[in-house]
Image (cartoon, rainbow, N blue to C red; front, side, top):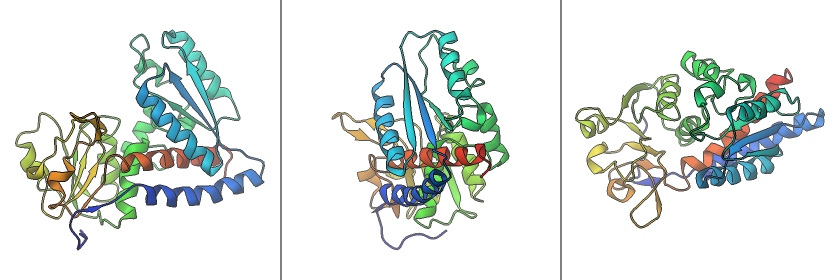
Length: 290
């Protein structure tokens, strides 16, 4: 694995996001010339703070590359039947190419049932089991979740050689951990998945050339968790004791030890919305046989 000569390089998401956006602007322009306007519909129930923050970023990113957007704001107390109807309406709308459903859904809604409703060809953030299966299969026609895809894009952008590298993913959720492991496997990395029940956790993670932290615990990853010269991708978004945003990694503690690390904020999250936009354009092309 190539390791940067400098220690503690903070690798930001913005240059990665900007490069993706630059390519998307060209692709969208080509489609518009043919009378095709890529469109994303966001389906949001209620108004959770984290949903609204992601929505603002997604709308801004899509608009900056020329993707049309709409938000279906549904009431917090919506019934399952009403939610399914809203989703089916977006499925059937020929002008909508991508659908993003914010999750988790409120308690009265059955997410397990809803994920079978969304049209797989419009499911741009891997809600449908069809797209989850495609991630496992390595089928490139599907849509892997945006955040794990952002992790891989960042590593590629900063020329981290993944072939044969020991990569450890800390976290096993279907949102980040498992799909990230699958995507990294398809880049020929040797992948280990760790979680809260892993024995001697810090010993296992400290053997990794690349550590992806996606466990959802503020500053859990300390100096003893990382190998000298490792590349660390921090996917966590938490709030520390002072009410400030922080990741799963205690950046100050590990900075002198790692070769590269993504910051929180301004790291993985800033690439995620670009991946979302990329998936909308891909979905639009597939639906129009482009």
